[in-house]
Amino acid sequence: MDLNEERKKKLDKIVELTDDSDISSIKRIVLGIIDIINNPRSTAKDLKELIEADPPLTAKVLRVANSAYYACRKKISDIQQAIIWIGFDALKEIALSQKVCEIFAKDESIDGYSRILLWKHSVAVALLGKMIYRMEFSEKGEDTYTAGLLHDIGIIVEDQFLQDDFKRILHKLINEKRNLTDAELDILGYTHADVGRALSSHWNFPQELIATMGYHHNPFNAPHNFSRMILTIYISDYICQESVIGYCYVPFPDKTLFHRCLKELRMHPSAVNLIVDEMKQGMSKMEDQGLF
Image (cartoon, rainbow, N blue to C red; front, side, top):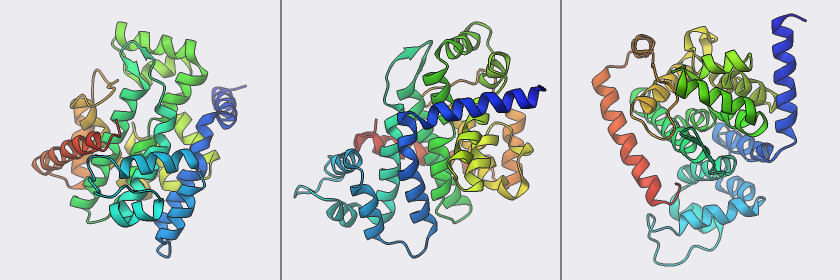
């Protein structure tokens, strides 16, 4: 068996384990919201039905709707009211975030890593990616938000199903000052990006999302037709690592590659700084909403 075959066999096994776990519970909601995002005929009723089919998600969304941030004088008691009060577009993101958050809920800390900190990092990447799309490309960036939330799902999978190997990976990060992807390749023979790509492909996510999850650490190796989203997530991930937002795992960020990505998207560093300031304000608002 050659290395590629062995690697594929390992990835197939980890996907199989994930499919039989609580992580797979996010699949239906994520696919449903992606469909609502990309279908111009979708309505508030579609979103309402999707959320209400998942009682824990309904409870979480209503909790956010009744948080101090939204400050409704009258208690919001159903999803239809929440859609009217919060807005259709905002509630799509809240529902998606609340559902994905379920797999990050475990709060065990190992060598500076915890799922909660990784979740905060993922939300920051999602928010920054969406803002770049809106402010630089005049697009909503909803798929980019989804990609940001899920780009590191492979780390969660390693944490849950390969605990001993994952601890060895973290040990390498701390004691040998290795980048995460290098440590993963040393110990597993594949990376969390490979896991994310295999899992999202198995779940029939859109091709752009699959490519972004698979190439978010090496954007110039990706298919060219998906390059803008992948470059955007790389830039967002890099900035959130540099800003130490949530869990940070890149001790030696590649500044040359970062600036190459900016140049490819024709983004000026000063414009990026303004967007980052707005992202940080958005993260504060999310804390007020009770997301963290």
